[in-house]
Amino acid sequence: MKKIIAIVMGGYSSEVNISLKSGNVVYKHLDREKYIPFRVHILKEKWVALDDANNEYPIDKNNFSFLMHGNLMQFDVVFNAIHGNPGENGVLLAYFDLLEIKYTSAPFYQMALTFNKRDTLSVLKQYGIQTAKSVFLNKGDVINVDEIIDKVGLPCFVKPNNAGSSYGISKVYEKAKMLAALEKAYKEDTEILIESFLDGTEVSVGVIQYQNTLKVLPITEIVSENDFFDYEAKYEGKSQEITPARISQTVQERVEEVAKKVYKVLNMRGFSRSEYILVNDEPFFLEMNTVPGMTEESILPQQAAAAGISLKELFDNAIQMALN
Image (cartoon, rainbow, N blue to C red; front, side, top):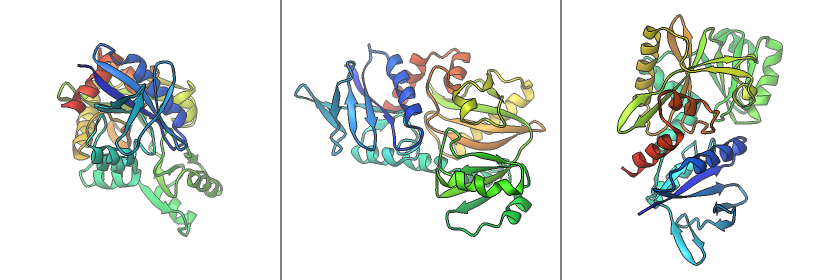
């Protein structure tokens, strides 16, 4: 009997349109011999399921179901394609836990933890994972620019603590630009992370559970045309994404070792894509994405393709892992 799948997409953050694009790619590639998929738009103004003809059916939030032509439609599995709030930060997954509905992501606590950059760094440092020097700020804190620069140096990165797709990030070269960078980041979040600049090769590492084993996908080297891997570089072609990365076998094995350790330490499940900077061949962890982009151009699907895994196989595996 075919399983009914909800592909949740949209969300309440700046990443809503990217999420809709990812969700539509999942919808396109799901095996119709095994699944009956519905796109479910989770938006501030409405929660609706869409059929093939884009007819909308309101979701009953009491049990996450909907009526279609008088029939009650209940989902067997939720495929989480929401970048940011409420899919990537765990909020929606706690709701699914209460309803006992299975989903493709890690449990809500792991999602909440990894969405919070500074909390993730705090955990990983205890396990010997190398990271940049950092300063944390909450909105309303007294800002001492000299103290910040003494700690992290220049240039440095100013980032919203809970945001994705490089929204709100600035690379700051001079003291005079620090306050403007903080203001930009505060537009995305009330918590800010300021990190030292790491001079090295940036790599993106996908780690997934594939056929009941932990698998590190071929590593991608990021070469941005811009000053760093910002929104334009990620989504508008202003970067080279080279898979597999141009690194030695020894460095590759070291990155894979660290990436697996990070996945296990954080008790992850499902998809993950983490960013590292290689400094003197040692990986320094930047952040983890637990709902990585799923468009044909996105990094993790590129890595899966390099590993010989099609999008159909990748998405099918995620659902089977959730069911099991």
